[in-house]
Image (cartoon, rainbow over all chains, first blue to last red; front, side, top):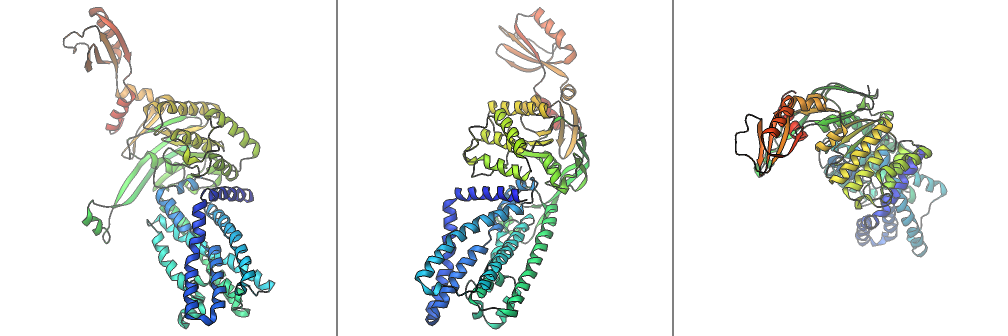
Length: 257
Length: 324
């Protein structure tokens, strides 16, 4: 399995380099929304500018590290029939997607981490105040968030066996997640009822949760409960992907010829 | 036997859409479905090392059957085993013993050179270094791949890509090879090369091959046995020569004259064509030689040719029959 992953990672890396411009646009394009949102909030609450700067810079970082595009890929591959090529090979197609995620996110991390570091040297609000323990938990939460978003995106993508242009479904989920994951505003600013909801839904664990760990907004029992809820959703999504896969295979029309 | 198919059925439920704006809008809230039976009660077996041609008009069920054999589609009913495996279970061991090449679909990764796809396949199919080097060397020579391996796939011509496609499919030395229109869109010269490669490869490795094609040249060059499918039913399974005798029990006599005599040819055979200086007659097989002799004796014949009817004609006839 390790040999297979090394081969896939290598291939995806070469493929990524073939798409230099697109990769660059993905990288920078995704930064605009959090940046603008940050300026809006700084305008509304100028006295809390510093914490907004840290929060939204963290959003940019975590959002890139957990982003998932697999729904669009699967939608296209299944609709156009190129998915058959992956199915014919003796390796589950999900591994191709996982390898792709690892390669792109590794690139994002390699670019974003130094940018943050340099920024933090010149701009104090960007400096994190984390203990080593917090840092480890932060990274663990980022990995968990990436897995959750990937699995959600992949299971939506599998719906393409039933519906054409399934990315629309994901679009709706994405809008909900915009608010409940903390991308538009820190979750503590949500009305109490929504906030309560956000703690039980999976979206918080895709972006906000790691940042809450980094800022120290969550610790102790709450932290443990957060990881437990995220792990619960993880189990749900894994089961979901497995079920959809099985059912989808029966439904597969392997279009095109 | 390597491949065994019995009472295979496949039906699809498809959404029926009428043409036009209003109808398209109506289909938003009301959908009519109908069931299409793509494959009906198909049974056959294929032995190790055979090359079998799978023929039929567009939409007859060839590709659907092939996709079921390769495990991509789930049969509605019936049984398939390929090399002892049930394709739809998609066991890795099954995938390692077969390959499906689709002329219209590429397994090569589009934006990077074919060699990268080969390396990925090497890892995924667990091919060890030595076997990989040997096979690649052999395929590079047979298919003349050397100048293509490091160019991005998208910049290859169709013929070049198909050669790489075949190589990618054969790296793991499959025992069963499904070829769906492997020569589609290729020029005559490249078609010829691909055919020669398939024959040589089959002879060398005793690979079992099932092939669909629209080019009768492929079938004539490659297959002794053909299966003809029409409207989802298998209407013929047997030797190509028997099919020809059955459906076209005549020979073509092409007779060239200095000047074509103006007369009724009915006494010699059925006239297929008359052009300046040439008459083409259809004559019952057993009478062909005698008729030729009589023609030579009675007329000033410059040249005479006796040949089998073209395969296209035979196949077109077969497609019109319910059962051959």
